[in-house]
Length: 325
Image (cartoon, rainbow, N blue to C red; front, side):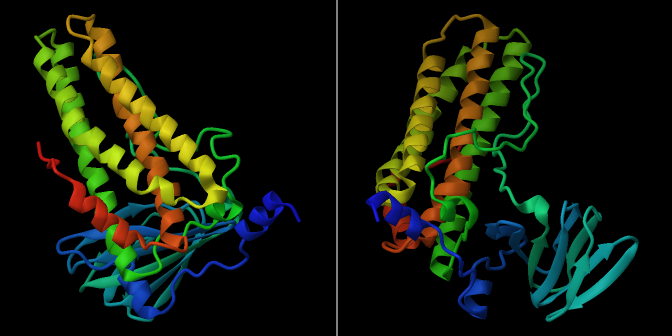
């Protein structure tokens, strides 16, 4: 057997350990004060497993799934509202829902749910873009909010990593994943706010150069250091069989850097060109963080070797510039 064949053989795993026990399952998404949260634990052919956690009184509404689902209360008590009926679900309750049924959850007390989605529609995992639909009078640019990873980008990525995205097998890894995704959310929120302010000023034909300068300065002080630190700490630990993923991420990071530099040189440029560059930066960052969230982090969380929690601690200690406004 050649080396390539051996790598492929090791890459395809018929078994994925979603949780090693009740404690690890609950620890994969702790209850957060005043929040309702969701996390995907597994995405494989024909099945997805989601974890939900709720603080008491929190509501997660207006959900519609394209596949049939089993809802199980792991701990606590929730009310499932579906088809005009309120269903009480204490710990241990399991309910089956057909596909395309609007439903919502309300936590009677701090609670944990597990949802299992089943069906052939789940056979091909899709990536969800972190860059929401962009629409502005200055520049109408749209995205349907759901993007597949570009064709061929991960052709060499292992079958295991592509189809079995187990996000966390331990409480420590779950906390690290929360911290990393929360920091990514802060970055995206700051980027969205600065981009919107710049587009508003451009649309109003008001002097917008200070907003452009503010966006560029923030990108150099907070955005790029964070992304470059992740590249330095995380990328070298990607298993050999998924090195194509690293090539994609580095190419995307180069694109983000180029977008920042392009915006930095546009003093006095036509307003439309400045707006186009700002939106291009936001979209490129969203795509990059999507690939990190849906491919890089699951791969590292499941790979043998240095725990993701330890990697996060190393990154957190290296952050010198706060992410604030």
